[in-house]
Image (cartoon, rainbow, N blue to C red; front, side, top):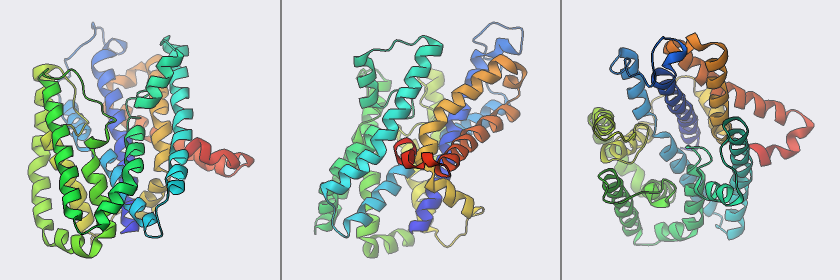
Length: 360
């Protein structure tokens, strides 16, 4: 199971980079169109083109990545708890996450300030660090930190005779956050924090149970694996169509998120299918394993790499912005390779003493 979870981590970080590369692809397609065509922007001529449809599909099937990271974290927290989960262990884990997170968040904010003239103040920096909003993807860090802080309580609950009630409570909480998402969409509530632990609390708790209650849960899940596969097949088109309909009807871009019912059903069924069909070998599993080991470093560094790459193309090779089948692979390759090479170089030099503070 542990090796399969590292594979899942590798697939997830690849999906993260693809998801955010497509975001820049939409920017190039609609907002930077004047760089390669004589048109006013925004220009939506490419809407419903074959390339747009492919990008929408990829954008909506890749957000399983952050829930996958949460699931992997929960499983290994449970593994650590077998020898006793102490606050010292939790604080060490938080330190290993928060120091590199703060470093890269500050770099992103400084970059935006110097090149985009974004305002920079102490209160603004503190708010963005606490909410994970220095980059749109960083909300995962405060969310997972909340779950780590709750993990001693959750582990105790899963070890207890009433462990299934703990799962049910976290399931209800995550269901309520989905309802909250719809209420925001229809303007009943003004906002919903992406960093709230309830958004993925059930998946984290289930992953703890998969470790501590493996003998009870895993055989049952495998018995129903055809159901998870069927749910995955059914929920995939609904997850894509639902979010695109919301975007076109209300102008709110939920593509690439797990805030809706069908997107959550797709994500959960994908994770359960992956874990229960564990007899199926994965292609390039060695590469996925290595990617999984470096996932957090790639996660932290890739937003800045993608932004710099996209803007370099904008200024020096604008014709590529209109050729998505070249622009997208370029972004994805740089988003993976540059962080990977940076981590490898740092670990092979005297700078390796600071590696954990930079990449976790």
